[in-house]
Length: 150
Image (cartoon, rainbow, N blue to C red; front, side, top):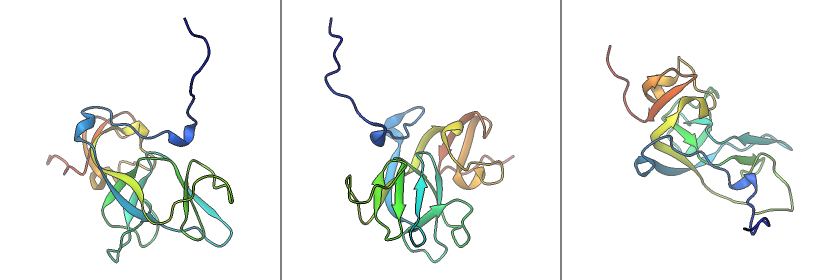
């Protein structure tokens, strides 16, 4: 029996996993809104983001003014600085760690636990997907699916 860890992985590699049928989940890439001067914006895994109204491939947290387009869900925790550069994780460490420029990953399709989604409300759930069972606080949602007509 081995009691010594061979390899450990930090939380920066943590990601949102589908609740069921993982092979049905699909991802896309987009550019996250850059932070203001000297600031950073953290997009936790499961954060609901919306596309900018002008149709460009720029995304921000749901509820951000001017971002009312299609909804997506952030796969990895990402922190973005004022220059639009990003790092995996909940903090941006200048001069340390891998820095990404360009696009980051999010889900547009799949089955997820509603409690794992950040920013999901009764009001915006129909724009995110179809709740298959339960509620917005504890249930399963199918991203990108149209709500069932009453």
